[in-house]
Length: 75
Image (cartoon, rainbow, N blue to C red; front, side, top):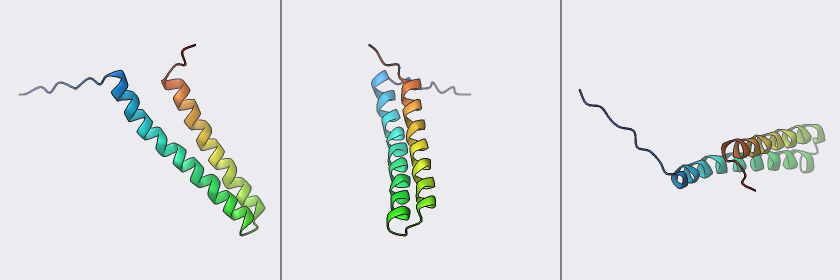
């Protein structure tokens, strides 16, 4: 029976991985907002476009909450 030891990450390595993951949330939020703008301006479906824009803003807000919760801001 072999026991594998889990590798511990340094704080910098952990931060770099977290940046990669959170960057995807940022892109997702911007794409959703962009789709909302497309719906509103090009297709002239203002209600649907506004709803997509709000959904994108909520995704970006969740992104912000994750960053603040995970990494304390040092003053």
